[in-house]
Image (tube, rainbow, N blue to C red; front, side, top):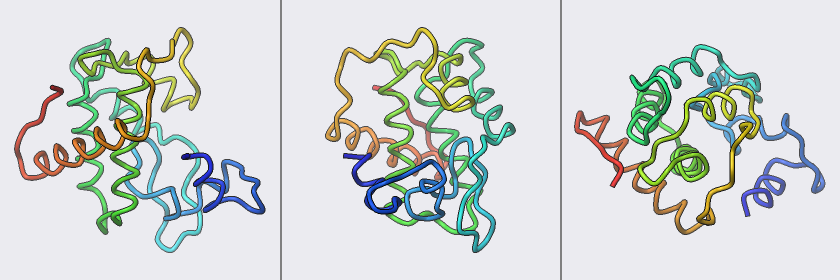
Length: 166
């Protein structure tokens, strides 16, 4: 479903490339976990990984080996704090979905994700070596449920409250 929507809204005559996906405020949005915001009134966002944002993501956990769901939610909330303008409703859903898909794809039953996987996925933009697909299918219903939960937790973090993987 995501690929069809991406091709339809960003592509050209049912063809799409990564540059098309970088069209600002279509699917791409400010506040990405590892990409810099687009310049004001820019048509495209930066496509290269921002090394500072990537390092911030990796340093979000005090554990040398894993990033927790809570860590990822905190990074999402901190990126939201940096925005000049709040994200639109659609881009809010996309940004929370990024967290939901990440934890479903790389997390264990407690929401812990190997830092090495996070570094390869976000830093090198590829599936990590040694990664095995999740035992549970990643579907739209569960992703939406987790993304909504991420939204609630981000809101609480922005209000100064805590979160948790339950």
